[in-house]
Amino acid sequence: MDYKKEIERLKAALPVTIVAHYYQRDEVFEAADIIGDSLELARKCQNDPNEWIVFCGVGFMGQSVKIIAPEKRVLMPKVACCAMAKMIDGSDFDKSVAYMIEHEISKENILPITYINSDASVKAKVGEMGGMVCTSANAYKIINKGLESGKKILFVPDRCLGQNFAIQMGLRSCVIGEGKCDPKENDIICFNGFCSVHQLFTPEDVEFYRKKYPGIKIAVHPECDPKVTALADFVGSTSQLIKYVNELDIDQKVAVGTEYNLVNRMRKANTYVLSSTKPECPTMNETTLEDLYRTLKSIEDGNPINEIFVDEHTSKYAKLALTRMLEVQ
Ligand code: 13P
Ligand code: SF4
Figure (cartoon, rainbow, N blue to C red):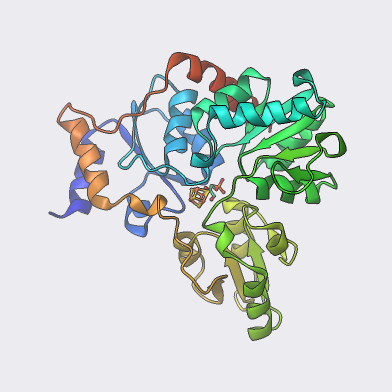
């Protein structure tokens, strides 16, 4: 079957918007009506006029759209879970709060911030405590906003993002379970989660490229280890990395430390993947053109598959945390 052609036919026939994150396979990415990083997609889906959203990405992204816009029918061709989001559930979050309380920080003095790469149940716990969601594109602003409260920040689940922004903002941070982590002596207390894809980039990779191509620029995502970001010329979210590379002189070599599909799609000349291995996100790569076709067809057949639902209680509090983020400009 010519899936591409069938997808075009179904798109024209149905009140549906196909959404894809930059890390999706090329053929899926090219079929999308809306593309973007996690922040852009959350904003664009909220304002989309169609009843149906078919979201090609990882589970927390589809869930976030359903929470922000509950009137929409959200389907995911593959309900694949981001490996980092899987590292924390509601009870891990509670244990992190308990850890801070044991170290003499009262619950009222904790402001939780969760990276959007987390399950709705974690976002709900954060929302219930007055906290916010952030993405890599707005973490600086959200942490700054959080600091206005004068409270200690509990940052989950990505320790690298928490540590990298603490360094950038001149704040003190520590990771629960790693060495001495005294919440009284730190501003940002991080949960010990990480992205297995962005952990692939090492200081040795940076050294390799600097030696091979003197003058090369190194640009990395803030999910990379602080030992790597410390050596980079630029640290930015997906959309910020794209902008940075696009604005470089075409003769300027650049090695980029983020997901393979995205880097491979950036300007072709003088752009390198900052790794000797292929840093593909396995869950983002699960979605195929055939999956996308089947999902659209299921709408046409009146028997939708892989629909995203979030229970009322979770949705109510997770929405608070997401809305607080979206309100920060
Ligand atoms: P962005 O917020 O930059 O889209 O990143 C999402 C993600 O999963 C990065 O690994
Ligand atoms: Fe999750 Fe990492 Fe994949 Fe991003 S690249 S979706 S953080 S596993």
